[in-house]
Length: 66
Image 1: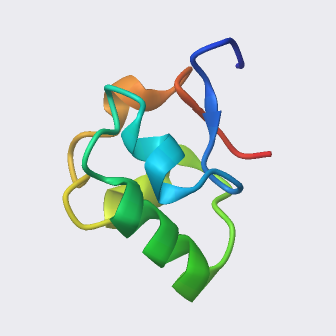
Image 2: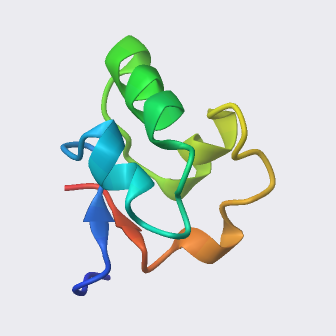
């Protein structure tokens, strides 16, 4: 799913991620995880990002994996 509020977390900077209200404050960790482990392929991978465990259920439609 994509839309004007949808963000590609495989290319977005930490600042771009933090600019999205649902992801505010998680940009650094999302980018760090991506740099250490590679591209995101599925929403479930965000569960492994510190601070997002148990909080990803509402993110489908907000993030995409381009």
